[in-house]
Picture 1 (spheres, one colour):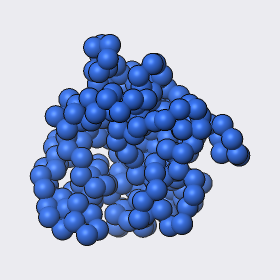
Picture 2 (cartoon, one colour; picture 1 turned 180 degrees about the horizontal axis):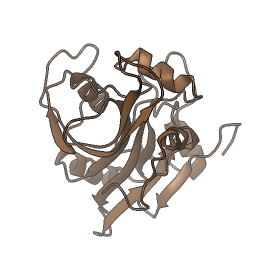
Picture 3 (tube, rainbow, N blue to C red; picture 1 turned 120 degrees about the vertical axis):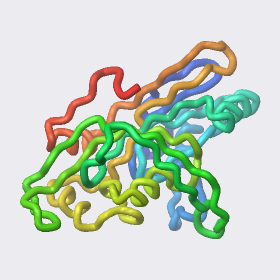
Picture 4 (tube, rainbow, N blue to C red; picture 1 turned 135 degrees about the vertical axis):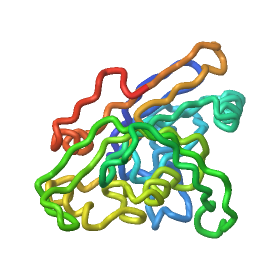
Length: 241
């Protein structure tokens, strides 16, 4: 590594691919959303591994967690086909406003492709409620504010899918300044938590060279862990699955 940028945490590495823990606030690669920035995960990883890398998917700037890359174009292509055929299971941790009524449910709601892409396409997210909690903060005429910890497993890959799906069901993602609830976001900022609470916790996929099943998990960062601690929430070592 050169420069002052810290190395990214490596969660798994072998001769064909790697999974790293992308920090919140770091863009994966240059794009129209970069706002003149020059620090990107892709550039850091090329320096860190001292070889070419091929990103297999991407995460939003504000999302932390598992980021999969390949060292050869052919491996990246094989992994990309797994994503396209929905053979890769992606599990995200999310903190939302309110308590969803059901412990498990699907959000099946078409989404457009983002700015300049108005065509709507099918979008499906499977959701599991892991925990519920309250903070001593009045809201909507109630003496407390309710929040929930979710495991979200997107079955499609639409633009900001989880964030927009949670908004659609009125259980906005905490810390999301584009699609969230500003008043609930402020509750967490007042407690020193300034990041969006969406974390790519786990990837389950087949190794395209070795033919073995891989499950890679990324531990939440200090700010996400602080949010969990507000409610006394903890995660089993292998959860969610």
